[in-house]
Every structure is written in C-alpha cells, then in structure tokens.
Image (cartoon, rainbow, N blue to C red; front, side):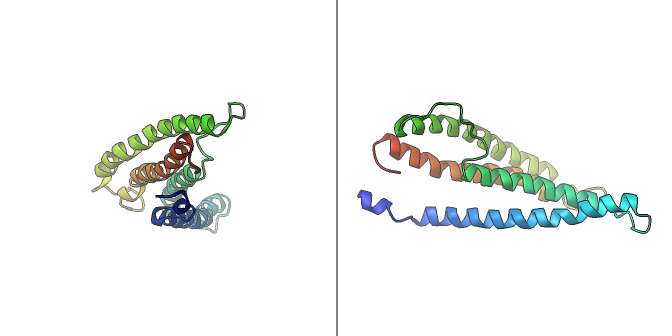
Length: 170
C-alpha cells in the first residue's frame, strides 16, 4: 500500500465513525429521557397529588448505567476520558509511544469489562428486577458492550500510533 491510500478513510474508519455518531445520538437521547423519571421522583416527594410510581427508580437506574457506559465509550473514542496530560510536550514519536502505553492499560481494563461483563450478564440472564420486573440482563449487558467497544476504538487508535512510531503519517 502506498501512503496515498491512507488519505481516504477505509471501511473500518467509516464504520467506526458511524458507530461513534450513533453512540453520541443515543447518549443525548438517554440523558433527555433520564430527566423524566428523575423529575417525577423528585416532584412526587413534594407534591401530594402526584402518585409515587415505582417504575421511575428502576428506569432511572437503567438509564443512568447505560448513560455512564455510553459516555465512557465515547470518551475512549475521543481520547478524552482516560487520559491525563502529565508529560511535557513531546515530539510525535515519544507522544505516540506514551499513548500506546496508556492505551495498553485501558485495553487491559476493556478486556476485563468484556470478559467479566459476559459472566455478569449470564448471571442476570434469567433474573428480573423486583419493582418493575425488567430483565436484569438489559442493564448488565452494558459492561461487555463497553469493553468490546473500547477494544475496537483502541485498536483503531493504536494502529495510528504504531504508524507514527514506524515513521508513517497517521
């Protein structure tokens, strides 16, 4: 392959960008929806004419977990969530090497989320929540999805860093 072929984003980059955009949209929607059950819970405590719905607590918990996990996925994709700037400004190759080390650490965490998240989801597969009777796997599956998504986005970023280290442009 020539360097000119890297100027055009490949299928993987297009799918990754589309998945990222989808996640951003879902994140915004989940935050907007999260406002409803939380607001109902708050107002129901202080306004006697509002009923105390039991589904609002579990719906808020489900949306809160998913919002956190999707936000973490987006944060890894945008390299904003797990990175801390503690090194002085370096040239491109040392910067790429430091990013690879950081990405390896995040990759270990991502693998744990994926591996243990599958077990976590299997544990909840036939269980339901007590109040709203929601299947618990809907909440638990957020962990392996986050781990897999982190690994996919980290692979793309590590590829760019390796290209920089090898002397090719990212």
